Image (cartoon, rainbow, N blue to C red; front, side, top):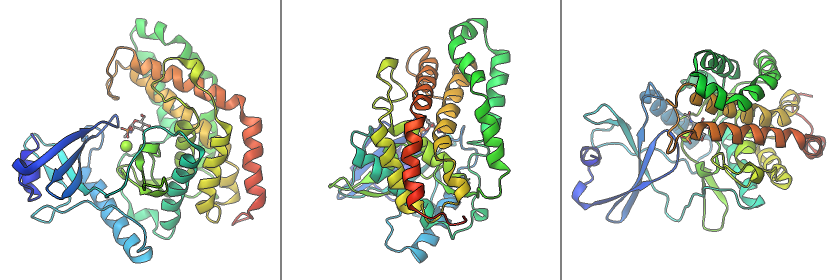
Length: 359
Ligand code: GN1
Ligand code: MG
């Protein structure tokens, strides 16, 4: 299947070893070994990303900016094909791209130490901070409205109205929670209209497997740049809270295992602020706690919506998996809200240390 793609890159398919790397609910990824050379090959899901060319353009533009302004930054640019293209289409219309595999680097799937949380948060902060002079207007929106919570809520309401009665009954708990926390949508509306909360170059998928680490556990750079586009910093900071604070993932069915590791929250804030404190306005700093609420709630309603719609978006391996994921995320939201008094104190320790840029 990958034969023609490898050939397009001038790699002899018979001499290549391809191993599937299993991570992500949207794209497909392989490691390709061709003699001494190692690569990562990805198939871009074009049901989700309607214009893969836009992703490719964004990555090229960002790569050019960073090589001029931050030449020391490890930016992993896609490899060009024999005919000079950064994206290849196969006979079935699917798009592929190839990246060099960074020797000695590794990715992790679960945050097991405070240091890993700190390192990852620092890398996502660094990425946005290094691109603060880039200007977001030059970027395509690869997924329009991706983190538009207002729209996500409307999509939930639409799914709720059309869902099969059986699914409505099964999901009654999460549905009730979705409506109970609807106030989080109003806060998002006020973020959108506040001119002190700027659009920045945001990664939009800050799970730990999107950070490359070196052999000593130090962060090298961020990867998986499909969703890099203009956005608010709460998307990145919040998704780290969603995915780093609990010792178990969004797939966990035993909800009693979901807890908030408050020292990891501190590590995320510390790591992110180590790069972003000088960039963030005081209005943004006031949103640090909200960032977690925003992203956990949005992911909860996205899983719930997909369940109500009959599981059409996220890959699933067993029935009701999206319902489990939604229940998991609503539980995480509740635990996060329960811890907020203490989390707020942690945030204030940092805000009070650093003078805000616009205060
Ligand atoms: C999807 O495929 P993956 O894991 O990179 C989704 C994210 C969700 C995540 C939840 C384009 O990301 O928004 O947070 O699943 N990406 C898209 O696991 O919808
Ligand atoms: Mg992704």
